[in-house]
Image 1 (cartoon, helix red, strand yellow):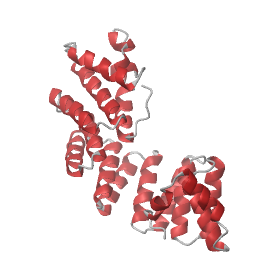
Image 2 (cartoon, helix red, strand yellow; image 1 turned 90 degrees about the horizontal axis):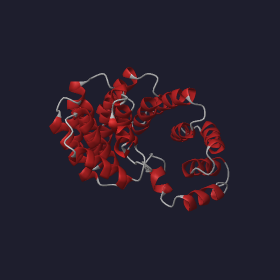
Image 3 (cartoon, one colour; image 1 turned 90 degrees about the vertical axis):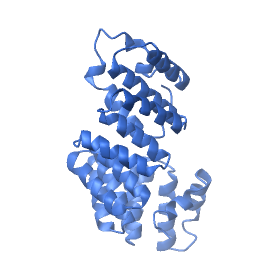
Length: 277
């Protein structure tokens, strides 16, 4: 499916389904179906899945999968109501599949219907409490609701279940930053960088934590490294410009700040959301 899906949790949920050995057996006729291969345009995938669903297949596992693929495709083009409807159908077929609740929760989060998202995640976790991504998404929903204590608790569980997954540390670092626990935020971003020294975003995240700690030397080094890895990243440019201005003359960072605004006009508003004045 040639599409940039904006909702990462749909992608994560679907990827887990697509990679399951249960989907791949030589006898399956669906191996060339765009619904299951992901090949083709969004419309072609949606239509192929609709045709498979309408075919009257009695293979509920594959029918649920077809609804899940349609949900991801609809979410990719911003039709979240249609995505929810697909996962409603999947849940109706088999209410014991935790991944269906997880994927529907992702759509509800994108719709900002946080209470329904949490209800679905509660059910997914009741059915399978060992999936770190379920706690990760529930943490992000609590964050969106402004409940940072609950969000932190969920992210702690994600890290406990998936200690090798950098995303848990990255998201928990964001929560620590919002809670103004900057040393803990830095420690989590350290872990991400240790796992992948070429992760530009991790240097940017840590750089802003250092800015909030007023450790401008280390912040500047992180923004420099991020720009080495990802040239002209707007957030890193703002960070480097801010550090230059604070360490030297107010105009020293003007070029970086101007370029950042040119590349992403709303970048200053995004930086203010980090708590940076």
